[in-house]
Length: 309
Image 1 (cartoon, one colour):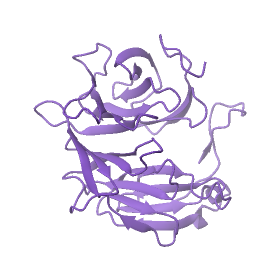
Image 2 (cartoon, one colour):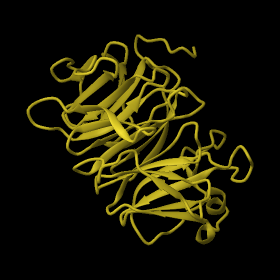
Image 3 (tube, helix red, strand yellow):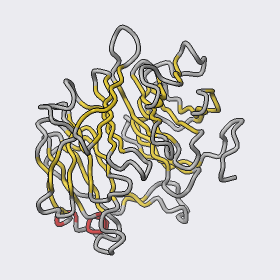
């Protein structure tokens, strides 16, 4: 765990704690469970491991130097490395996980010593190939909607109430492109962005099945990445801004309303993940395939004036 306090003089983030585990990390997520009640003031950290298990840790114990005793619980069920983890945005006890084994699980962490397990489907697997992304719908009126996508280029929109896929989307073109990311519109429950190895980004309106409403590719924009889209996030503070990062070391901001190019920033890389700050609109973090973690402040949005200004 690193301190990203803006009050510190050094730009080098200070490590404040660490925990060693037997397996390699494949994914990580920080959840808010227990924060409101004061039981876990800093929330919890979930780590997805190469053996298919998920470890639940107390970040305060890690930051206090007691990493060996930070384990709160464990989830077991996947038969391959846990590639994706995401906590529910409103139901804080729910954690979605996905794996190289092609399956998607929903864990109820209300009792971390004995986590509850369910699936969003009734089939043997959620996908025929490894899962590359999972994403909860951000709108509060549809807490039962979850998306997942795979190396096969297929994205499923799951209705957890009926345990079935209500929408199925496939990658464009004759050859199936692996998906690399999913990002829901922060307010509109019907819109989702899908990133591919192509490089291609599609924005879908679930009310208009059969084709995306916006497609960004080398054919539609000269500013598109030259290689794969490796990371993608919809700005939670400004729904007109969609951020993509590619293996060409470019991070690009797009107007999600029409797919037009806004501007780009040099954030290092190639990046494997980017995260917008939950409360500070112009701040985001990035991690790279080269093992570097950075916190950035972005103030240039090209011709678009963000809503917070």
